[in-house]
Image (cartoon, rainbow, N blue to C red; front, side, top):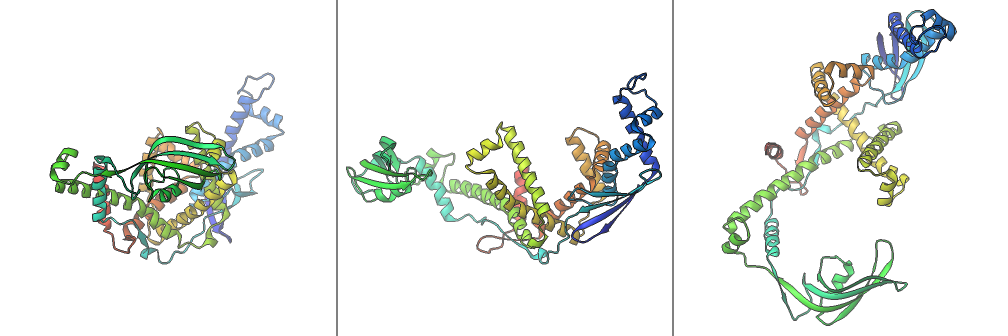
Length: 443
């Protein structure tokens, strides 16, 4: 087989293919075997009818050749895109130009391909991540949380303030007088917003024995009025922070040791958060370099469909239907598709930009690297590398796999070269992020 590609307007490529007659003969033999196995011809057992008999039943040798060509053309096309090294994003428009009746086969296929985009400035991108600095306020909050666990409630005879605890009776009714909430002797932490946010402001300044009422709109848009009676007010007294208390309440002997552990844990957590957000921030900055004009509906629709299929598989694994998911999330199918479409536009931009980075930085994929990836995939799919390579070639997926490997290289290059700063514009040590990731992996 010989295959060449010629670029056309509007991100299309014309693939010109020549197939030797011997290759079609092989396909013809397969068609004859298949027809022979399935045909019921008087006087012959299944699979034993001579070829001339099959030709006669189908209308002659030309009809049999036409059937062989129809069956084999998709395979010829798939192999041709591998030979020509193109990665189509649409179904081909195929036109047979020679060989329908005899001799070598020639055909042309017009397909859509991804646009080649220009992304000036990709080498100077800035990714913003959460700060990795552990602040004194962070440490104190962790210490106070530990003290909170050991705190004791005590009655107070004063107006409610701060985050006091109040014991109350509460009854809530909607505008039609229906009771939607009715509790007695309920211990409530002021400021928690656990009932309705309006209640916190209404309680502060009141004392035990007093009443109040608040009206709030519920998630289902019903308006509910709550009548509240306060029967007690308490405050939580926290234990004094001493070495003795630390030794009793934790695994550490001193305040200094406790603080050191908190600093270490907070530092690891903040670095992990920065690692998670680094890729997202870098890819978002990269996507912003791609002009909307390059984002075709063809690419976006394919991405949306892929995400819908992925969602369907995940729901199926949980024994849920898409209808149940829509009901649970209170949205329509149209709203779901629209939300996925917004995400898909960004994903398409990232895809195009990463391919542009790979091309600009010469991050090609060698045959050795491709073979190495095929070995890994073959192990995952419990097959041999040779068999998987044959399947990829026959399905026209080899070029696509190389493209994905190139994108992986481009992604790694970007994360190694993007400038990393926190929300205040302070530079973040990328090597620290890498080192911590390696340490987490080892542990």
